[in-house]
Length: 74
Image (tube, rainbow, N blue to C red; front, side, top):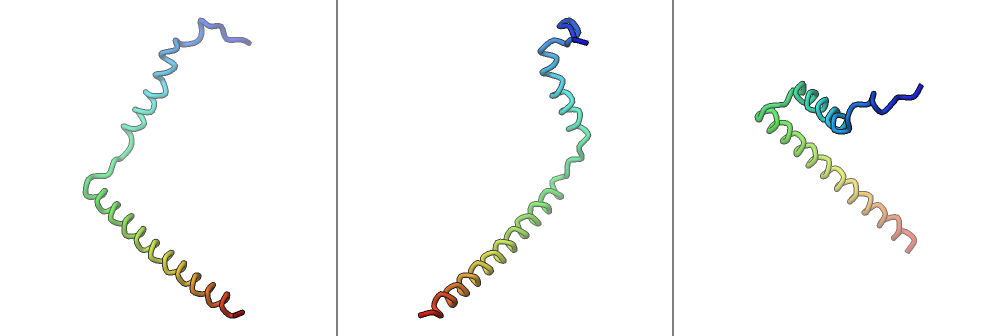
């Protein structure tokens, strides 16, 4: 069964519909306050710093190990 052109909503309405539903959903979102955002940001920066330090130490250790292995044959 084919849908005739008269059954479709206007083009402008079809474009606006997703934006309306998006804005309705955004109103339902619980947005954190300033204090919470500061805490979350500090946690993210701290974890990022710790992870970068761990990766640096692992990379340095693997580099030293590779140098030892490559220099064994000389």
